[in-house]
Length: 243
Image (cartoon, rainbow, N blue to C red; front, side):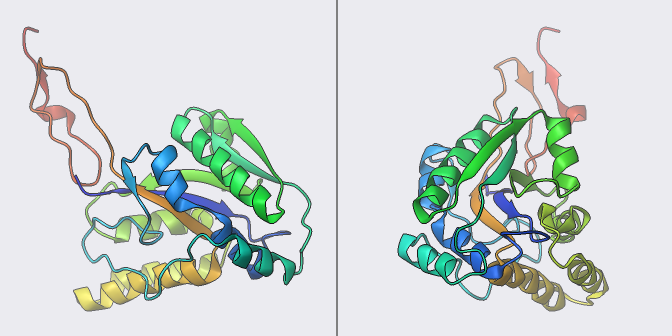
C-alpha cells in the first residue's frame, strides 16, 4: 500500500519565536526525520518527500530537496535570527495517538540540541483540535491524509486548517486552492501542487516528518475488506462469517 499520510510539525508563525523564518529554518534543520521514521514509526514509514500526501492524482514533488538534519546549520540559523535565545515553547499533540507522543519526544530532544526548550502537552483529541485550530500553541504535531484520490483534497485541508495550524499566508494558500480547481489540465494542476510544496520548503511553516501507510488488520472471519489507496475502507462490502 503506498504512503497516504503525512506526519508534520507545524509552527505558529503569528508570534515569537516562529514569526521569524530563520528560527523556522533552524527547526527544519534540527529535526531528525531518519530517527523519527526508525523509532516512532518503527520502520513502517519513509522519510518525507514533501508536505502533501504522495499517492494522489496530480501529485508533484517540491522543486528543491527538503532540509536535512544538520545540527551545526540549525545552530547557525538560530544564532542569526531575531530570537537567538528563545523562551521555552509549547508543543501540543493528541494524547490518544501513541505515535504522535513518540514523535513529540524526538522533536523535543532534537530542538534541545540546538538551544530551543520544548514543553510537551498531550491533550484529549477535542481539546487538542480546539487549541490547534485557534492557533493557541507554539507547535503542533499531527498527521493527515486525503479521503479522496485527488490532490485537491489535501490542499483543501491545508487551507481549511490555516495552513496546517500555522497561520502562514492563508490567503495565498486559498488562492492556490482556487487555481487548482480552475486549472484546465493535469500540467496546470501539478504546477499548483508543486508551488504549495515549494512554499512549505521555503517558509518552513509546516515541516514534514514522515510519510506512512495506514495499517489495517482483519480477522479470519472477515470477508470483503478492501482498503482504498488513501487509507480508508468501505463498510458496505464487509461481512462476518458465522454471523
